[in-house]
Length: 330
Image 1 (spheres, one colour):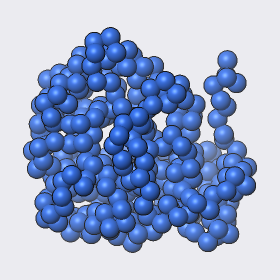
Image 2 (cartoon, one colour):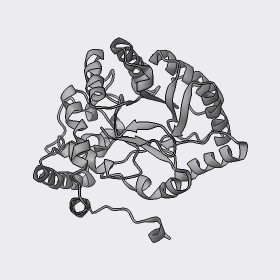
Image 3 (cartoon, one colour):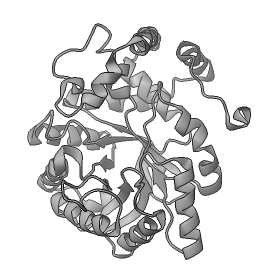
Image 4 (cartoon, one colour):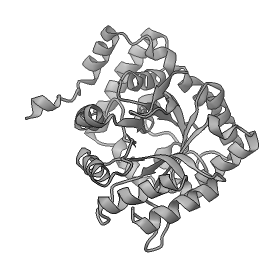
């Protein structure tokens, strides 16, 4: 396993990590979750990602149970959670001081831990001043309930505002962002955040590197039963798997699969390795519903070593979607 610094911090996290989104308590039970997490850990993964909203908190409970059952040394792990959607109560949603402080306590209780290493603001809150959020995240760190804080799916402008508040008030600024990033979703990570890497040393813990399974090739002949697209509550995702744009992506996926065969790897390994080649990606969060998927995904670190500039050019020719640099947009 390769280990990378998270942004400008001294914290080292595995280049490939393992997350609980979709799968925990939805597609797999605790025994399978244990097998998957153990396979990831045995491959060198030290970062495990979660959120208060995943399976309405059940994912955190399951992960906490697994870690307690296996008995891993806490200092060997980097655990995260994300706060925004905490329940149906009038103050259970958002980034207010009340919800953030109550939310971190609830997450820690479910995880059976005294602290998480990383805590994220799961989405921007249009109704809570960023200043209130920055002060509260600083307080959470000062209380020892988290070591670093960051954002997820915030715009560059919102992150810069948070940095400005932290600098002005001598508070701890956000260290990392958790954005979607894959071969079909590139602009924000590659262009919009570019000034943040240069100015602040922003780290990224990217999610959906396989484009919700599209880059596994399993949707090439239609939508099979038992996939996340058919899960209750994922109607928003199902809409992305139809229409002319979807058909175009399927043709691209088929071409990428041919390139993967030429390299002697699987399509998911190629897609993960491609993400790893971005120097601004601190870690690629993987997911799995079977231990065999974990084993396959972890080999992407070796596949990344095969992605020479020539191979990357071939991938770009197939994708045809490289976003223009910032200076070309002015």
